[in-house]
Image 1: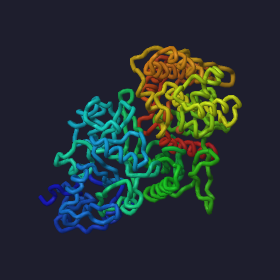
Image 2: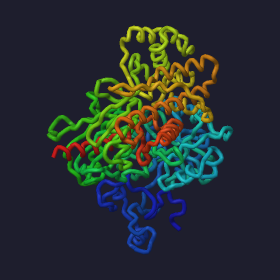
Image 3: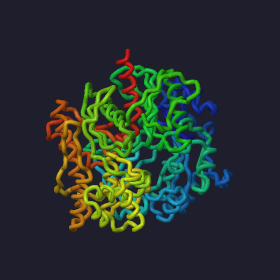
Image 4: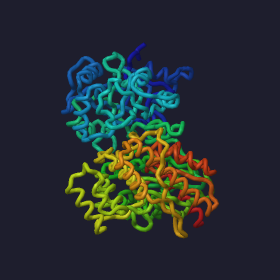
Length: 636
Ligand code: FE
């Protein structure tokens, strides 16, 4: 067969699709395969109704399809009789190779070579964030990771996501792949090239991390790869089939016995989500971190794939190109834009020429409605939204919110009591500052004894800010409270990637621990408050008295879960509302999520969580779209 070991083999059930489509309908001339003319044999198969490649748009064979090439950093071909074999040899000896996949480039190196992994981290400026591992097959996965039936099924599913599994110690992987974490992100090969990298058995597992510069979108064109990944990759395994739209790997974790998406991209987009009302022509521009955009068509919401933090010009441009791509392929003309109410949001409709209405939505309201709409919860729901940051109605940084939400509006019925965020961004990077300032509100100068690892200078500067309350923005962020607890226990002293302190706190917690601290939930006529600093102080005193960090971390999780359920129960008593939706990045924490869900159920309430969308800011555009549709319907 001419397709033995063909690098671009595909049939009607597999092969590239979403990332090569330029226009609809999905026909070869409207894809990036238009550049390749089918040979006689391929054309015959393409036109035979009984053939497995009948109307397989990317059909090709070695004589008429795309070709692989292996390039050096200058973009010159590396001499070899077979680029793929040469690439395997380079990888085997510790090289970092940029490998072109379906939706962009990966950076690959051996997963058992700590020196190569360290070099990759240094060049990519990615200090500690875990790296995904591609393994040859399921047997390798089972050797290096703890997996239940759900994880196995996800790993082998046709969506081929990265699956977060438990790490097995001593399995031969480099220790710097997921430092400080008990988990690993694994995926199986999903293109012919991936399979062929492993076929000769030179290695069992490769690091396969997105080919990007930190926080920028994944690189997807050959030119971009050679410029942006220059100096990171030693070589480039590329080909001449263009990727029209970038699409990163999706990430899934099993929470409470079922899968939850942590990143929704390849394999899952562009499946639409339902809207409870007409959202046609609404264009949602998403949140701030981990954003997506969404376009409404009739009563369906089409969300884009994950692009990256919306902090760089490249990411903003990347999101806008997805807006235009979605509008074009869905054949929808925009009628209104929806965005975050933050005055400095980067995603805004161009000032020139746009006469369309611009609808502003509060960040946590969007989270709440996203979870409601996904679960088809009608009317009002009590919504717990725990995340890092969102611009609040009072100008403060919100992020530990209990809302009574409806489709078009919401009431803030409770929240995490405000904590000082000393020095703003600096307190996010250095979570010890957050811990000291929070403890200071409860213990005054005694707080100086916490975080003994902090440099004196930084400690004094933080306490000075706490004393004078200068340069301290009030925040109700649950993410920041978890940061504080993680730093207070000496688990994460410096944040090098988003969510790191909380992820490591969860990883360190003893899940068998059943002790709890006092919940400290109070209700007044105005609002329900959870005293996060008070809970943190109890944890600190416990730790100071000699309790091990893992036990304190377990108790802290249980206490927050108990306090949350108690606050929701109080709100349910006054509102009569029993449906509870959970959203926000903090619900990527399995321990927190499962305990809150359990507590809510035993209080007689009905919890709903995200399953089809990530609970993090990727779901915000969906909520925005539904809110814009609901407001438009009401104004008619
Ligand atoms: Fe958020």
